[in-house]
Amino acid sequence: QVQLVESGGGLVQPGGSLRLSCVASGTIFSIYTMEWYRQAPGKQRDAVARISSGGSTHYVDSVKGRFTISRDNAKNTVYLQMNSLKPEDTAVYFCNAPDYSTSSWLWPWGQGTQVTVSS
Image (tube, rainbow, N blue to C red; front, side, top):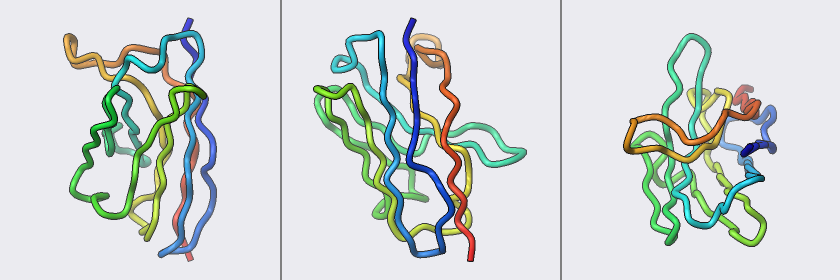
């Protein structure tokens, strides 16, 4: 059973930075594309950044230039460096591997990590 554990969230002022981590256990992590998602209260969970097994990255427009996704396959970990944070970035952040054949996700969701951007 694959387990995802996210960490690194917290309360930060607008313009601040956070680095999120997601450790995946029970899988051959290196072969999978990984994504970071976020879910704000009352809203659906949306992907914000993606990194392929080869290291290619993709971002949604709202975070482009501010967020950086990276991975360390030796540590089974994917990261999300978030800079210039805005109040609208407030959400619970999750990671997972997309399943493009079903438009779903490969693994059970972790608990997520709360990011709150507020002065």
